[in-house]
Length: 433
Image (cartoon, rainbow, N blue to C red; front, side, top):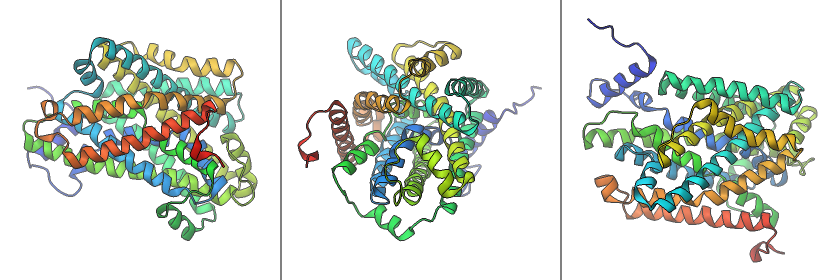
């Protein structure tokens, strides 16, 4: 008689089967299916968000909170569509692109997507290294070395199945959330102003528009769109459309909850910066400056919590970015390279940037520009494939959902175009006084 498997992943798979078969019920049954959206949500609270949120809060107080809310709603829509594609079709977005487009188009999409994955990892890796360097007073290069070792070690957890990685990333997200909860308890928040800023659209001046463009234009991450479809494609064994519909319902719940948490963390970043910096230090725009300014304003504990959250953000998002890069390579060209090689390749740009003495903040801005260029590819491809009945069957998006996705994509891509034009120094008529 064989011994039943006791691995965490196998036990989770069995519980999911029990839920679908009706043997396991209750309001918490959806927690068994939670995981993919938690991992994808890390992209929405990575170090690239820190500088933008700090700028928004320091420069304009609570006035741009509504932009964060809008960006989060767009993120929910596209992550839900990505998960839907994987659950219904059993293939991830990169695989659909490989099978659905011409070979030259696929090659171009793969190259751009890989560059985007490396740019993503540059920002995430540097963020974690900056946090370690500041917290422990280390040279930045040493912080990068520690970050490299830690992230590689965490990536090895994936060999034990999907559940340990989901719990690991979820724990790091929890650390980020607790740090910012502590920040909100320490900082004197003007809650009435914050509530108004979250629901009343306003644009104080043209510089605020530039920051708003940065918040929304860099919210929907290319690698997160690819990754979410891959995380859901083989996670649950589905036998019929009834079970498929049930899994989709659980997935949508998870997307809303996970992205709502990510959104609240981003809102907390802006509120903390607004409370701490807006009145006396509105010029604060860099992570290092924010840390050094927080200590005299809110105390050493608040400054340490800020750095701990940054380290957790950098490490978790770097792990997720590497997972996405591997999925992109497997999907587009059916190539699977060793994890260590993949980690070295994605880390190399960050080490080169620091070794050359390039300003870290400028490097982070440049990485966001690369992401803005690459973003149209997965967004448009996702809308195309989730709308095809040949791919999705009865689960193809209807006119309303497809229309919302197209409108959201048009908004994000238009703002990305404005961001790129602004970075390039091109004149933008509606942004000139």
